[in-house]
Image 1 (spheres, rainbow, N blue to C red):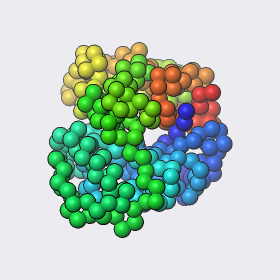
Image 2: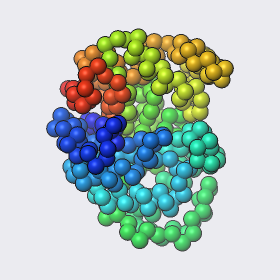
Image 3: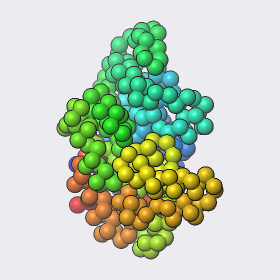
Image 4: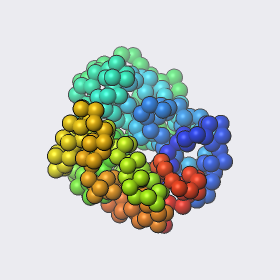
Length: 319
């Protein structure tokens, strides 16, 4: 079992990360993983932090495959792999329509095929091969890395639905899940494992709100999660799992710009299974449920707390 903190840390400049990384490693964290929404990208911080955490595994969850060309993604991954030889995991994913089309001026088309083609291209490129091939969703002509990594990174794929889970099991070295409950993990992992994923890694990042006031914690969680759950792959995934009524209510309220109604449409029981909140003991117990469900690398992301952030980040580690 591995435990990851999300980097870069909020309100800590990258040049000042070293003592915080050391404190978390001493507390039992084995990994530091990035994300990619609208803060920093998923790969640059890992290259910058590799020397500050020379023993930890570094991971990206996830680097979007539409916002970069295939060759650029390979070059970025090669740089991190050289900075952290043998301890880098490249998680790739399609992201969402909002990030791809509205923010990056790309087309969100044929996501499963694009993921498959990207994984196959990266596997060859990071092994040092010269690529001159037409894939189903793109073509690469005459590309080879000048500095292929001595140890290519593991390639993990972000997945939710059955098609992408099967692709991750067959083509990737692990799977990155997101915004799922412990019961959801148990429901989706058999699809991943049946396609070849048995024994491979499973990453999941869980938001932690170590806040004694349950109503306040839930309100913060609702503000964070409602926009994700109302559209794109998360909406389709949770609808397929039987939460279509709730998803539709959240989406309709947001479309009317009625945010309070959207927040109210998220049931407490569903919210409580997606995040960990309450006392330190309660947060630890809730996080342990994801470990029991089959997650092998648990990302613990303390986004709110009554106590100093670093104290909570260290204390909520499941024992």
